[in-house]
Length: 168
Image (cartoon, rainbow, N blue to C red):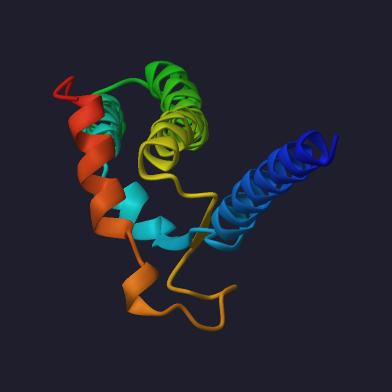
């Protein structure tokens, strides 16, 4: 009977030791929180998708601007009738308003698409690197201090550009 109690005591102690080791590992992992920072404006501006969509928007803007400039040139001509001038003036005003509207809506819509893609890729990047928190700031304005050792802007930028190009 004493022998059984001794074996039971050893088994319980062994079990408690295993539980203690697992708890220590768990606490150690919990304390090893990985928090990093990125410069959001660098990330956005240097993302390939941003550059591509900017080129598309600029091309469309220039095409529309050329049309408006040609209307303006016609309006300056002395050889057109007053009736035709009034028609062209209305068209000019309408086209110019459309250009302003296009510029505003394009910037808003495309920025939204770009940030959505960046967020998706950032989530994947965080999981792959076991980051629990990525703090984004523009020129560190809302963040008072960031140690350069936790700034992963360039790493994340490389990752999202590779993902966007289908290389990862």
